[in-house]
Length: 299
Ligand code: NAP
Image (cartoon, rainbow, N blue to C red; front, side, top):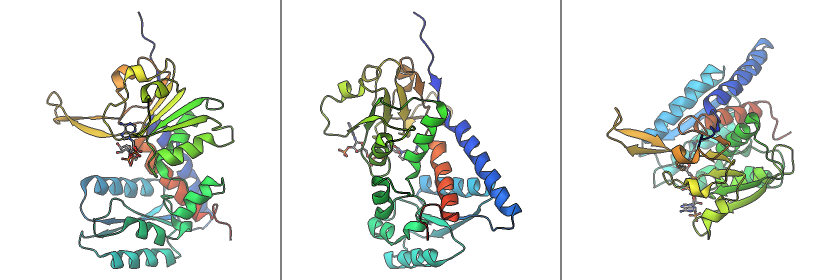
């Protein structure tokens, strides 16, 4: 029997499209004599993944015409010193938005740092004020990954209205905001949402009922073919490096979904890498432009 090929939701292409739109907007601002938007990233310590993520943010910010700065601190930075930096960035009128790269070293209380960020400059959308505003459907900075997934679905033409959307994973940065966004009363969402986690019973049956399955659990290739409904749209947020001696690099990158087998069954699927990943930074850039234009908090 011939297997049908799903539509690959290519995050690289969609991210590029959005960046082009952003670059055009920035260029118009500059032509009008305005200063460019300014995004700052603060990084503490030498975590490899965080360093490369921040480097990518810096590069992509510059590509679209933003001013980009990175504040790099050693692992030994104290909590008080980091709070002082946050206060400084909160006050700097030339900084539109900033992020403090997580995870932070163990001696620093992450929540305390997040809560010190001025919600108007919280382009990661992690401050409780933005979380609360999002819940009440008020203008807010939406966390980058769920915002990117909404863009992926909508720009790929995945029908969401009245569909069963199952989200696996309830983290504050992905699963929980995703559930809020997909259940919103608008033409880009209006799905019936089920939010699964590690205590969910019969997860296989629940997932197999999904028209849209969004997976963010941090377990390599956890979602198998028998957990997916024929014709479903599958969004894979997970990203893992797996040892593989057959590869030149000695590893391969996989997601939370068994792509090879699941892709035979679904209508749409995101690859890993190249699906959700590229959208995260783009969403951050979109949020920074919103901060610059004062679109979220009106004075
Ligand atoms: P997280 O904070 O570790 O949360 C994992 C969630 O999955 C939790 O809610 C947990 O349930 C649930 N879970 C774990 N095992 C499960 C199981 N066997 N069955 C059902 N649910 C289970 O994860 P996260 O930060 O959301 O990240 C998830 C994955 O996405 C990771 O691989 C991460 O690297 C990746 N990620 C990628 C991007 C990107 O830009 N591509 C961005 C963010 C995250 P409990 O709440 O019950 O513990």
